[in-house]
Length: 133
Image (cartoon, rainbow, N blue to C red; front, side):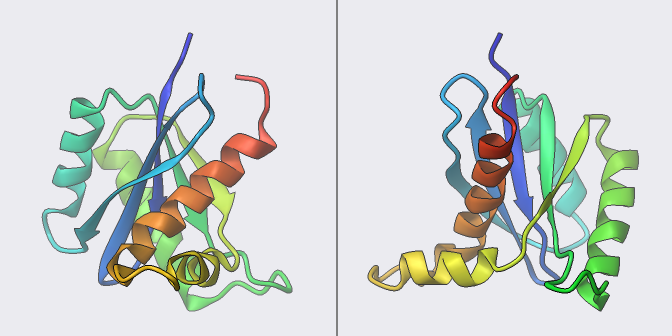
């Protein structure tokens, strides 16, 4: 049975979202949210509207395994998300996804979608690494 997944690229100002299902195993950019006081409510609404069964969050592990300030911020976000949204959460290494997203969008005129594309890359990496659903 197919499940819908929500990929999240967390940032202090913007949060990129992507959606995929386990049947097609193809992630697509979904939306970019403003990181404000309504963030968790908006994510909760999207999860209900899109019938999401699992959330995959990009975690910056650092190229040498060094835990950065951003790593701590993402872990704090994950802790709050677990309280606010009662769905299974998975962490996915997000090293270099923002750079890769910017490179993918370099040829287009709409570079504002880089956070959603980064979320797509995170989610697609998760799907590619886990073949059996």
